[in-house]
Length: 225
Length: 233
Image (cartoon, rainbow over all chains, first blue to last red; front, top):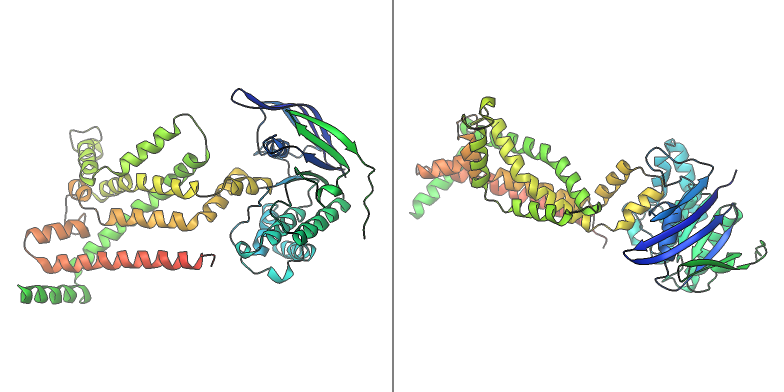
């Protein structure tokens, strides 16, 4: 059963200023959404609220199937959020990939296997034992994607994943996100510009003046070279 | 005078390397008391530093300012306060802790605590909020996320622990007032140096001073070498 996210009557305010007021938003298995909007419109805040990392002032976010853990009522193990500039933990590339797997309590052998798959998936095999901090911006973005992919997320929030990347890195990142979509994950990408990643998305959302409007719904077919 | 200085220095080295029982007894008391004190203070102080850096609550700046102020309190004032609390007529007089090693440990915990809180607070402040969010979104519960952040800040945290240890092992005011400088029990390196110097017996003072100097060098070289291994370039 895939992951489904429903948000109802989400309101976020900073002091007297209301950032957004969203009546309803639904994300289903296999969805690919491009959330656009000007700088400061609240894209990052909205995605963090949907991912359970931030609290709305009112309203609720429900993710089914309900797998919420004892220690958090907001975070869902199948929902992962990636920052615009991903945070990479100190240690090696392989250690970063193993981070979430260790938390799942997998055996060392399983972790090794999954890490090696993730390294191949993100084409980072040769960098497995390198310090993760020494990677380039594009490599770090691929590492962050692989670190999320290895956890088999049902829904992935990507905040401006191509910002500050060169064209080749953008293409690599787009390829990885395409592979994630092929695997059945739902992906929401925020970006204020069109790019190869947003072109993968068939639902177009605009966050403007505190409202989310869906203005485009392409057919759900992706073409592969 | 120069001859005297040379002779005293040679004598101090002899005391040190002949493993003079009295001298090494003082060193043992110093290390035992300070190690216990730093072990007690470290974890709670780091957790408070973490909370002050990561949790937004009303009056947070006042708590930070309070710990900063406590860090600047002279050791003799801490000693005097504890003396009044622990003396026979004080509120904790019945515990009979005055002039004991536990009293010295309490004093050294009180001295190290604000320093550890302030330095760990700075260490955690330097860590990006994204580290916490990344840990949480990848499945870490709050406890594991705290451990992750501690790992990310480990060099700065280690520096704060070493600075705290350096402060308490070399302080004289508090140990003298609530320890009482009792031989083989509460006499530590700084109180012994103060006593021997006042008696005009410089050899033991120089030997103990050398121990503190070597300790300071060792701590700083250790920290520098660990930091060096953690450097990005």
